[in-house]
Image (cartoon, rainbow over all chains, first blue to last red; front, side, top):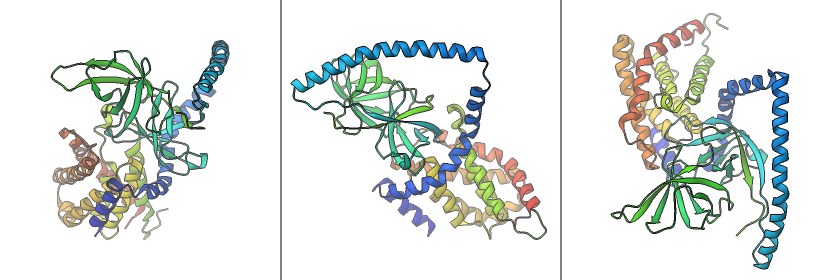
Amino acid sequence: MTGVLALTLIFADVRFNQMAATRATLSNAAYPFYWLVDLPARLSSWSSQILVTRSTLLEENAHLRSESQLLQGKMLQMAALRAENLRLRALLNSSALVQDDVLVAELIGVTPDPARHQVVLNKGTDDGVFVGQPLLDADGLMGQVIEAGNASSRVLLITDATHALPVQVNRNGVRAIAEGVGRLDVVELRHVASTTDIEVGDLLVTSGLGRRFPVGYPVATVIEVTRDPGQPFAVVKARPNAALNRSRHVLLVFKQSVAD
Amino acid sequence: MSQPGANAVWVIGVTFGVAFLLAIFPLPQWLAVARPDWVALVLIYWVVALPQRVGIFIAFLVGILLDVLEGAALGQNALAFALVAFLALILYQRLRVFNLGQQAAVVLMLLSLNQLLGQWVQNLTSSGADTLLFLMPALVGALLWPLVLVLLRSVRRHYRVS
């Protein structure tokens, strides 16, 4: 009896994707467990914030101030460039790129199964999180939300063996599909012709073609290109820019307008 | 809390709760491969100790919750746990008279079946393992069985769970 029930559930979930709402509801029951397990990590980071000497704080403050000044200087130029970009886009009759809105979230759990690359965040539908929402850290794209509960959500990382996303080479706009292979430090580009202009060190950014990820976020850097004349396609490996196994503070992106 | 004659069923829930916490506790990658299936171990213990309380249906519910925690296909652990509980229900009278080594051997078999069923379901989504390393949690679990048994038995006796 129970076996048949379980099998039905498995097929409804895996083959027909019918259990999304149920999973979202049940994930609320899972949230307290993740919250509890994350407690020691939060306590230690809290205590390391409280128990700091004055000189360290002053030093850090000075450092942050100089960095902020540096970034502000860069932003000045950025404003002019953005205005120019908008004007040029207007000349080309294409829609304007609007800056994306972000929500800062914190990672509270990692899936225990080493074969799955998923993480749990402390923001859910109460904060406006939705299924399919892109996730970034400071360095690049991390993944997308696959399950949103009220107060927590589950994210599939770009290196999971079941994940693929459309990218383009930043240098020349060559498009490709980046697929996870189940290793945290590698994504592979599928079906890249051997004659394609792609080199080690090229930056891959989201192309926005899948209509899921916004355009232009860095995804990975090419680390290996193997062109074997016996093979129909070149083997291209890239290392994700985001610190997938380290980042704790992450950004959820809200797209404000359709950018084409 | 341990007044005589009390059948403190809540203790069973607490032990499962602790097992869930251990099951999702973050471990480094090399250690996570060998993370024993704590929830299955606790489940086997309670089925063997109190077969009239914990059976296939409880196993199913526990499995569903673990599926949600792990982000596995809904029903993956539920199916495996239901089978493990079923076999444990058949075997519990023999298990009780076995010595620790024999018990660990039977537990190894049950846990391996659990892992194998999980792999079958994972292969449906093509995220299954390609080596026999996926049996590692079962092996570690079986080695830990004596510890789990002694610990849970003392808990059961202390709170007089029946």
